[in-house]
Image (cartoon, rainbow, N blue to C red; front, side, top):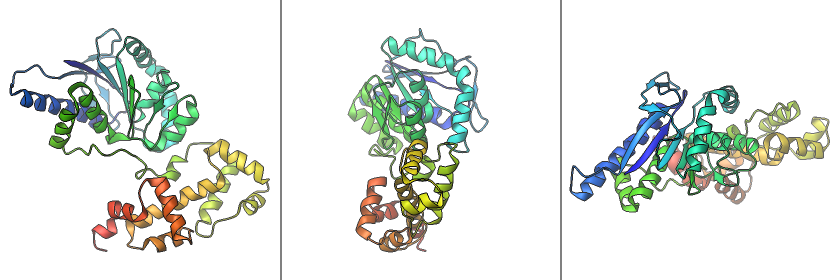
Length: 342
C-alpha cells in the first residue's frame, strides 16, 4: 500500500485537494475491480495534513477538513503540497507569498526532511514555490501556474522552469501546472504505483484527458509578463507598444519617444520582463489574436492583419510557436463564436 500525505495551508483551492483524493479513491476501486476482490488491500492510503492539525480555510472561505498535523517523521511514499490561490494577479500572489513565508517555515522544514529520507515530493500549481523555497528543485526542472512562470524564473534562477509543461517529473520531485493539472499529477502517481493500465482505466472512469501535455495554448503571454518590475520607463514603453498594436513601432522611434538610447531600452526591458520590446510586442499581438479567434469568425488572414501581421505565414508560424496550436486549430478548440454559430 502506498501512503500519500497531502499537505495543505490557508488559501488553497478546496477542489484541488478533494479532487486529488477522488482520483486515488477511484483508482482504489478500479484496482479492487481488477483483482475481483472487494476486500482486497487498497493500493492507496492518504492523509490530509496541516501544520497545526486543524482545518485550513480555502481561498473561497470554505473549511477544508484535515486528518492530522504535518510530521516529518511519519512514513510516506509521496508527499503532495498544495499552494495558495491568490486573485489579483502575479503582484498580489508575490505579496501574499512574502507575507506568508514565516508561517510556511514548518512545511519547508518538513519537506526537506521527508525528501531526505527518500519520499517523493510533488506540487500542485503554486505549490512549486514551496518545493523551490525548500531547495528541492535546485538544478532540476519545474513547472507551475503559467501566469507565475516568469516570477518563478526570476526568484529561483537555479531552477529550469519549463512553463509550457503540464507535468515535470524529476523522479524524486514532480511539479504540475495550473490548477486542474492536479488531475494529471494524481494520475502520474497512480501510474507509478499501479501501472499504466490502472492509470488509463482510472482516467476513463473519471473522463480525464491524459493527453493534456502543454499549458501553452491556455496561457496569456501579457498576463505572464505582468510581474511587478517597478520600472516606470518600461511601463511607459509597454503602454506605447500596446497602443501601436496594429502598426507597430520601430525600436529607434520608441527609444526616441522615451528619450533613451536603444541599448538602454533593451537592457531595461530584459531586466524587468525577461524579453525585448519586440518580443513583448509579439506577446501582446498573439494574445489579442487569441481573443479575436475566440470571439469572432474572422479568417486567420484577417486576424493576422488586425494584430499587425501582413504576412499570414509569419503570423501562423509565430502563433504556433507561442501557443502550440495553429490559429485555425486554436479557433476550432476555443472559438465561442464558431461554436455558437455567430
